[in-house]
Image (tube, rainbow, N blue to C red; front, side, top):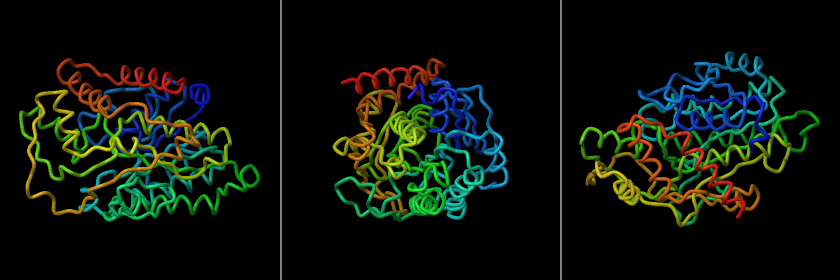
Length: 358
């Protein structure tokens, strides 16, 4: 991917967030000209400020269409990665209007800004594994399965998927590529992402790290909930590979894609906690027998056959390694004052090259 991104102007919305900050770091290593557009970091500390990368970020709301249009027209990005979102399930119950406004209208705004600009080659809209109508099936959801979502967050991401498909059909139709427009649009659905540098509330790893640092015991709501856990570099590698294909003008890739672990590698919350505790003995937890009074899916996994067979993308790190690297990031940060982002990224790239060579 290095050659395709070198010298390209890449706009990342949500770059001050967890995934966005990791993506910006990788793109800078590949020589891309990164432009950020995001709200101010939502936590302190945060990965964005820790990395302190040298690129310009517009601190603004994704709902500010006028500002978005100005930014896109000023920089004429080759590709846009749209990661800006309200990303939390429980928060969406408390703030449903903000959640839909950000996740649905924010997505519409970035698509509209790119349409008005008319020069963007590729757009990757990042949603979530929770965009599907979850019927608690044991097999992973395929890209052709029905959109849905029980809670406001999940349904807002299902709406973003439907919106993107409609916008593509209406204004960026694949059959009219290089005839009436030059933009290819895809969506990317990832699993439960972990990795160093996430301090969000109501996320499993950040919650247990905070508790460990304060010598507290974490309260676990849904210990048997099973999710497609993956290190943050896994979906980012998928987004970048997908973006590469779009910038190369490969029309067949302008559609929806799943990026997650193999279905057999999905873990329950308890399994993740046990593996995390084996990496840092300070981590301690207990099961809250009352659970949560808010609906949360018990079983969720993604079918990634399409990405493997058509995009040539494969999960690269085992769950054991992903969890070990995540916990080690926090240990190094708090105990030694070290930031392992670059070393984790270099190791990932090295193992990525080896696995693809095999």
